Length: 453
Image 1 (cartoon, one colour):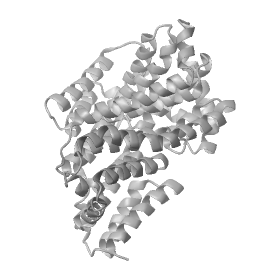
Image 2 (tube, rainbow, N blue to C red):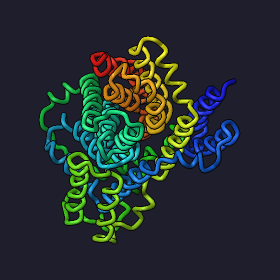
Image 3 (tube, one colour):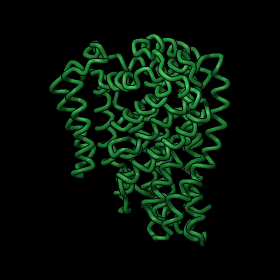
Image 4 (tube, rainbow, N blue to C red):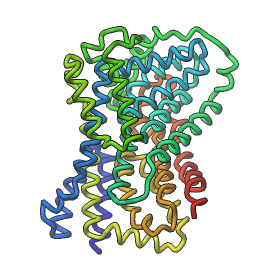
């Protein structure tokens, strides 16, 4: 067997073992980098470590550190309350409020599963209280988390833009964000209509109580805690409550925009403006704002460093290190030449998108985004298709399938559903998730790739 096939087989094994055994994929990938580098390519340890993505490390640490501060000081709670208050008594807008909350939370740096874990207990509690279909509410939460994830300071956006920049590919942060946001919004709208949205609109105004959020979230948290073992979700509601209410400084009324929450919101807006308008480095800018908030409000910053998404940092660091090893050893060029050799660039493009959707529905979206784009680089450099269009199509294909109950986000929704509704939610999410696995890549390819050829 050639060294190219061996190294690609090891990558596939890393994804499989991480999915089946629950081991951090990044840790496996780092071990694979060490073993394959030394045993197959006779590389040195320094050669392997040269592929560690230091720039992405700073970005991931910076944005998740800033989001941890926003959770600690109650800014995230304030955003949730403000969104629900904004709908007034219009129960038909409650699912969209949950969509917007998740989009905002991931857009400011939360890992997608963390956003779902925070919002899902509240959202599913509202679904029970106001007789909203649980599948609709769950899909709105998951697609909202996806919609915001590709912002310039979102986790998926940071990873994708970092890989594009490091490979000298043409890219557009704005196009990536708005195209993925639109795709997630369309899926959310279809779900809304399919699961009783028009009936909700017909109900008109009702008494939607913001004060009921705490009780409903506690109820959903208790149910999810008891169900965590059977769904594979590690007690998500308990973690959500712990994250949302752990800081002493957040003991104030979460509906009040106090000084530190206002300053935090200003910092988040400044980060977006700096990244989009002035091309400032996202990672270092986020770290600067986070450190400034820590100095200004030290009490609410306690424990924030521990809440940085170290698991995600390890995951993407390991995957990118392994893929960089493959790049340095010519495996990526070999694979890219094989894809380009298909002879039909449009066929090759849709195959890449389908692979991303299928793998992501059962494995880590973060990992597949970090792995597939570099593997597609040689094909993209042939200029047979638009790099900007294909990257956006690949991003959509790999992320909107997170509603699958076999993914972390889908499992969180199932875990937070009422016990008597859990089987229904699981079946419907599986049906919708598997349908999206096929439909989303083809539609994204047809809209974003085909017109550019």
